[in-house]
Image: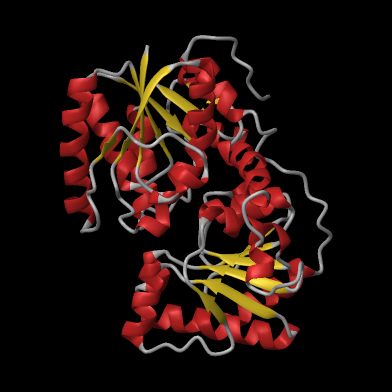
Length: 363
């Protein structure tokens, strides 16, 4: 058996890391195909070294572009490699253009596809990520759903129950493995002169937020008001796309401590010790929930409803008053919720399934 692991962005590298480690530890024949969808080395290239993962055998270096341009380059590159490598199974993860391109190419080449983190739904087709994950799910042969909620979404769309496996989410595995690794490598709080529980952490990168001047201005206003109200430092590692748009719109980050993008190992340390996290990232919503840190989501919807259901997250949108009231509400809650994303063994379950070993599934 030969397995292709197709990825192209920082979240994919992180969430595939437990699967890659498990494949390597078992001596399974696999290769990594990196599309280069994130083209800034700080944003993803360094992760392979930081996370002690093998370097990709193939790197397409597709870079940025419109959705059509980027996905087209991804598909052309992946087709050439899969046609020469002949993998038995192609694994993709999440909801990016890399996932869409990888799944479509593998399907047209009549190769088996495994979709890690299948079944997530925001029910908002205005999000390109929603289209990507729906298409990937419907052409995949192995759908690794992180939770029963995700499985129910797939069943509701008519996908065969025999293709669906509830494995837990590899983000739990990744946090357990990588947080321990990070503590031996860096001390992010010391470097940034922060105290545990003494800051709010912000991430912001989605196009619907940062490419809209009014929305971005509202969010920045809310962050300043939040820091002032609680007399708490607001720490904002700024994504390159967000920094570009802040400059374009002439928006000043006064009252907010901005930093350059952080390495993943440093960032999860900041997550784990923050008083509150505010984000438009789906993965950060999950990580906050798992780490026991309250979260306010700066969007109108979420494909991680489990975080809301257990009380770890409030979906606030981008209205400043709603953001402030949501922050107050969740800061007053006890941090006693249960992690809904599994026990940290998802990577092992996925490799068990694709290598036809015992299927250790979650109920």
